[in-house]
Amino acid sequence: MKLLRFLLVGVLFGIVMTKSEAVSWFRIQEMFRFQSFHMYGIIGVAVIVGVGMHYIIKRKGMKNVEGKSIEFKPKPETYKASLLGGSLFGLGWAMTGACPGPLYTLVGHGYMVILVIIASALLGTLTYGALKKRLWH
Amino acid sequence: MKVIEFISQPWHWSISGVAIAFVMFLLIYLGKKFGVSSSFQALCSLGGAGKRFDYFNYDWKSHSWLLMFVVGTIIGGGIASTVFASPEPVQISSATVADLAALGIQAPKTTAEGAGFIPHDVLNLESLLSLKGIILMVLGGFLIGFGTRWAGGCTSGHAITGLSNLQLPSFVAVIGFFIGGLLMTHLIFPLIFSL
Image 1: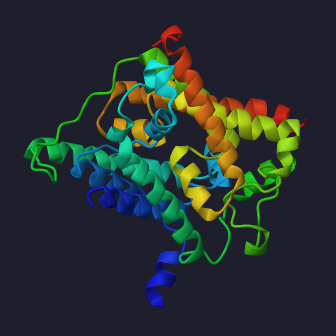
Image 2: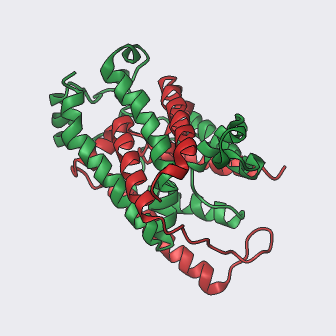
């Protein structure tokens, strides 16, 4: 089954999020207090390797598993949304110590209280969907 | 077994960074993209929110791969916290330990006190009965959902994928992440924790 591949990549991601300690509320506090290089190192290396990867894929015209050439859609240029939405997410990231990937990972760790945070995040998403047309983008 | 012990140590940040880039590559190679917060939109759509709001009125099955990825992430978290569990809790800097102690949060010193993933003093089901707990968990979660969807991405979609592809909107979003995170940590936390 085709979808099973994504399940396996997800398993790898959950392991990486845990072993990197990016799922740790304490690590996120350390990051926002500039008291360790750990999180900056993780994100920095991922971005540097990622920039090289994007460059090579474009340069070589690499094809994906389906044989189609890989194309990257530019992010929409909605700068107000990026800044305002991003800032609200930043508040939530510091409060819960988790961004979406780690939230799911922590459910796997068995912390049931995380389900409350995910349910609230879905409520936030629903509210965004309801207000979308009235917000700056 | 040696291999399991090797993987079970906390990973160096450089290894972790390369591993995250590898996950991004796998998703791109499989014809998709790396961005976790879209799963919130898919879950709302799956729950029928498309009947009321246009934002959710799309074929959520186009995101079924992402929902499978999310299920995998949960399983991966389960495996990593048992089979590959670290021998000691997350070791954060002593400066952070001191700052958090001043807020009344103890970083675990032994695995018996916790793995160092979540602060059990404040993030637990009983604290949902307190104002502090409701603010941190319910409002915090709400802001994650609302903010990531407004910004069009979270750490994976903007900070990793977007920056890797040199997207200016993603750079602006990451600045926003830090405006919010720094404001919360340095100015608002002292108020919340005095409740």
